[in-house]
Image 1 (cartoon, rainbow, N blue to C red):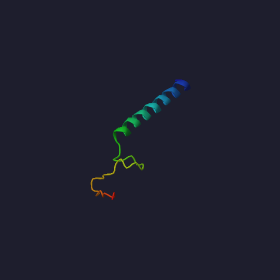
Image 2: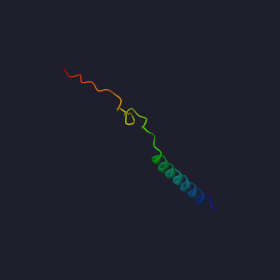
Image 3: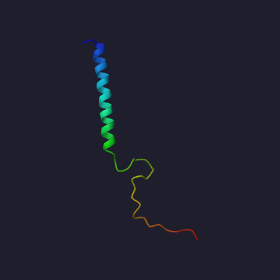
Image 4: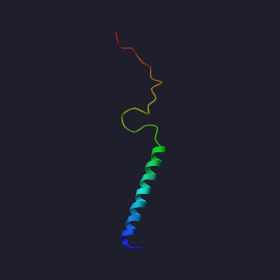
Length: 53
């Protein structure tokens, strides 16, 4: 094999590994996204106070 074929196979293998990693990470999400959006916070135990008087 010449060097060009080896490089093409190596780049293809890296691309396949990258796509597999993206798919794997999309199925194994955390409970929250890790930012400050509060999407994974459970607000069911918080008492709501009516402050309008």
